[in-house]
Image (cartoon, rainbow, N blue to C red):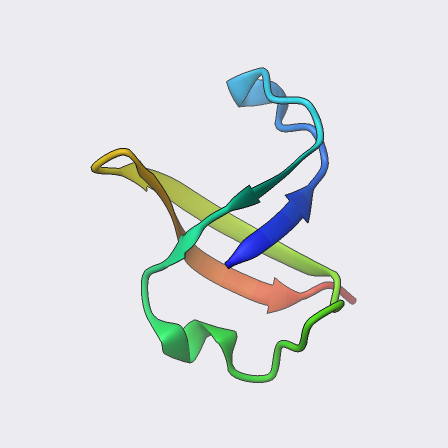
Length: 57
């Protein structure tokens, strides 16, 4: 999944568009292309894996 995100200060990342893996595809239920989202991710085996995602209110 490709996401555009704002800066992540703790990782010293600027705003980027990058690819993430998804821990469980059921996390994507109710989320459509173009929706603003809030998400958490971890680094695992060289990949960035979304562990939680929800539409931004």
